[in-house]
Image (cartoon, rainbow, N blue to C red; front, top):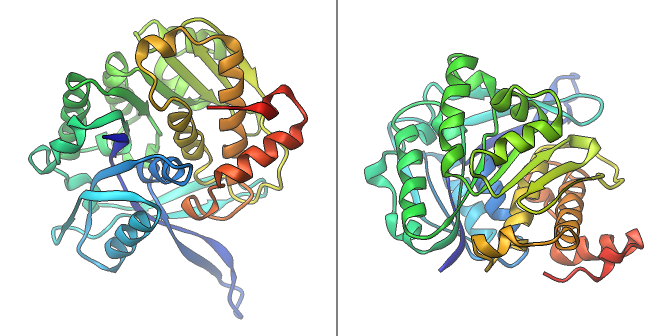
Length: 328
């Protein structure tokens, strides 16, 4: 039984890495893709994870497979294809470390995943099934994603969804909103950025937006707020939590580290247990996830920068709060 199975994109993030002698920007090859990043964080904390997706039959695809396997992720659901190359994303960082993306994906191998190629045995044997909206931008991966989520739900998995909106990958904002809303009624756990919350709910305040998402039947809605921290809305409580102070150099993968840590904290809990958790329990979990996400921004890239369990716990102890005694 896997703690988490994720379906979607794994790709190459080319991140800024200084300049050459001529003053031209250099880029470093880093493993990326939100679903893969989420699994890597969970696996680094000790979780058992598996990935479903498609890469090109090329050096980039081989690199991604080796990286995920080295991170402890089962890749029996990863398919290689000659139909298209592995998707590439070039990341630009501003002075605060916030990033923007340019994608090489017309198409990329990830969007060519068919439902008939999905390893359903993984979906039958997972506690949490996680996916995002990047795999919903086009067919056939859109149908594969929806079908996989429904199949996992039918077989008892909790459904975790991160819309992860990338406007360059959609033909229009209208289509993006329409497709990104479809999985809401299926989802138990939802993580959105503030921008994504506004897109999906048309609400101006965090509280109203989260409340509207909960009304869709979601048990836990998380709104990540970048350097401002995060907000959670559960069935029994809600609250804001500050980010922790680190020397941020690259925010790539911070939200994914948050989600991977959240899955780790919820391991072994069913929906009834999650719905009955009190504010003290959520405080400890949100603190843990915020620390994991913040520490990720202190390194470059996503998977390479994700912190260990010991590093997270040591940082929580340094905060000098009641959360120093955090126990999952």
